[in-house]
Length: 393
Image (tube, rainbow, N blue to C red; front, side, top):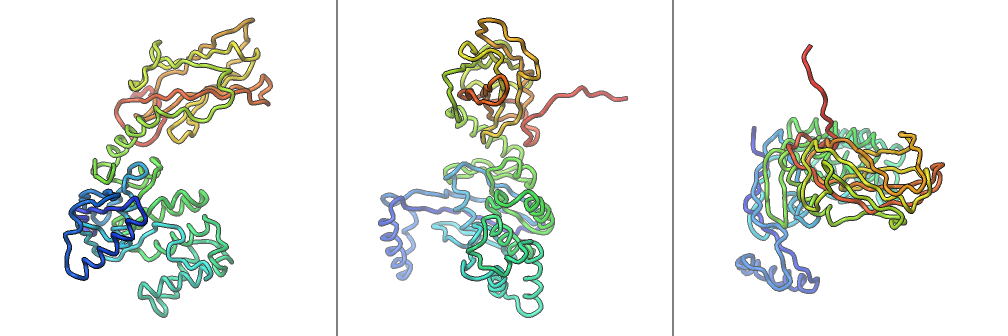
């Protein structure tokens, strides 16, 4: 397949000080005017490298997911590729038409209607006459914002801006499409249409996709690029890139305790194979998990929920004592819960306990979360991966 994008030794620096940034910009303009280009070789006071020697290429038909934590350089990289920022060193070679979605309202005049904004964008792309009319009609059809298409953009919700921005950038069928977190906005039906549209475009385009959603990256991408502090730490299969991302998340997850409510009412101990979980020591896939919950301060017959969460604090599974029809003995102190095997994908998770009143109406407490990591082979971005009994018949 044809190479549509080449990023060659890209470096980009910023200044932490606004005053210094303005001063340096003025000096750089003067240096450019006089033909001096040695300014890019070293950092000046308050400056830092946002990108450091980033180098990769992208072929037609590839969808690459750019991963990394906040401040890793993802958005800076995309803006350099899109031509919105000028790199200090290195270069970007693009072949073919470029479409990008970096910010929902980027390029839209708030006082103009959606139709007028799309018309201006079409004209800037060189469309005239029937081509322009067809482009506007396609954007209107895909965006599905009805009568708001002829209303000023300043009255749009973030979801409507997302629809209009995605439609305006994707219906032109660019050779290179850059997408930055846009699928986090909009309703489910629109996100499903975006997935379908990206799949269509990727058959004949090179797509760069940035998202913190592991599921979205796994669903859309066939390749992963992991950035850390401006450097490329990994460039290869998307599953391996996601595994690295999950491992990095695990280190951060161990420092979190999550939201709590009256945590002094309940204490818990997470056990793996009967022994307490050691902080920083990963659990192997399939090891049995159990929990000791100190319930000495709780009312008898309270409803106890054990919550399994991911790093985004989304509940993946729960175990509710109501389903066990427990009969609390007098002076109960410890509630032991067998959770089954840790049939989870490699990554970071946490366990917390929520307690409700016996009738399930009042929220009594929510414990601190106990973080843990699961190790093993990474098979797709599905957090719960149960083992089944397989046989041929």
